[in-house]
Length: 292
Length: 344
Image 1 (tube, one colour):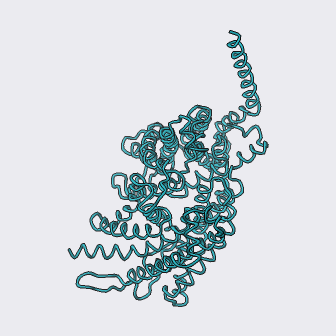
Image 2: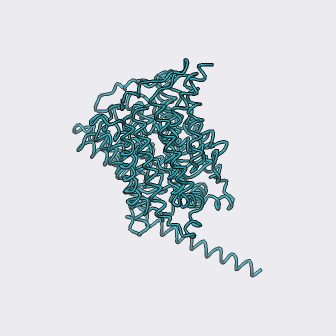
């Protein structure tokens, strides 16, 4: 019994981090219909900001988090202006944007590897290796803090989307781009801002990831499929769905890791992706099935 | 009675008109060029008699391997419009199947290659049944996840040596001639792949695939069995990629997950087709030549693989943004395609 509680706790702790990693992706897909394969590589960028902040100046990753978020958000604005704004007219928009984000992912990966080599890194503030004990159940402090910060950020995002005027505009654009435009929403501006928020969230997630996982530039490919499975299971574009999927799959992966060994735990995500595509292609909270 | 006569008149007129059209396209085609290319490449190893051109032969062999793979990818990704980032799974399956047969029974992978291709095709059929239910971004994502699944599976499968793989016996020929069996195997496969893409493009099947890539719903309502067509296209394209993988393993003298199941290989296939021209016959071949040349150039001048990845990304982004139809497609659109490159 204690074992099972332990597994659930570890799964939930990781789930929080995955939820933040996935929610930016989900936001961008919802508003822009872009499947951003570069998202994990941008998370990697955020992780390096936090890593060097800690290594060079001893800045705690949690304090470096806003800095990473701002730097990455600025990158997001740049990418949007350079690439995605002009692609909006493309006939094969969804396909084109996937391939373009793929190219961006390679550029970011290559850039990071050129600058910082493919050495494995991890930010190690004191709490990263520490743990709380409740009875015999231990909770790693690093993952707990990361999970709590991500939940706070996701809650802030949800409140912003629900109550702010701009949040209305974003949700309206997600639901129906043309109708929103007819109602006077500046959809291009909405696209730009939500893209920047989405990539900014990737930066924030990167700062958290930097002390939860060890990382190196080409590791983002492992995250791509993991994050995509969250987004597909949750229903493309549904942030709530992504968060729920993150928790469900993380706990499931923790169980798989416990019973079959750690190598297989990540397989949970990939297989889940296939099962969802087979059984319910629109995901848990998705509306439009993209059935062929 | 006269009515029937008129109809047959019209039919006859249409027939001559069609014949005229096909003559025009025949004139714009230079069949001699691919044949000349084939003859030149067949004769190329003769250079070994006058000097050491092993590096050149390796480069051509490497390019031919990618011609096979990119042409295979093109059947699903170019003709049917289903972009797969996971085709190196079939490369790995073909390589492992032939490699294991070679390691256990000693039968050369060149002989096993067609069977390895069929194994890959069978797998492609099964995978296609699942992943081709969704299209667009979801399909691309699922193809990416496939690579991850196979990577984990192969790295932990002890029978095929896990992450360390299996080393294969190198052939006992003279260094000067050792590459040649593989060279001719790849040359034959490349010629076969290009011929097959030409035949498929001009078949009813190929027409159906192109209809699917333009508008799947309309294609379906026009009576095309889109599900079967797509899955078959996936199987055929897996066949070629698997065949290339089979010989590639023996050529390198080892099979290991990290030579087959790296994302850069599937990216290369996609990139070659996009750069050369998706859905054309010559596009993948031209793209393969260009990308291999680019890669060699970057590795030779800059040396680092990280820079190579970045450069590949930049080329991909630029090609996508400015030449979405690829070199062949863009030239053909402006009616400036030289006759020697019109292989369609």
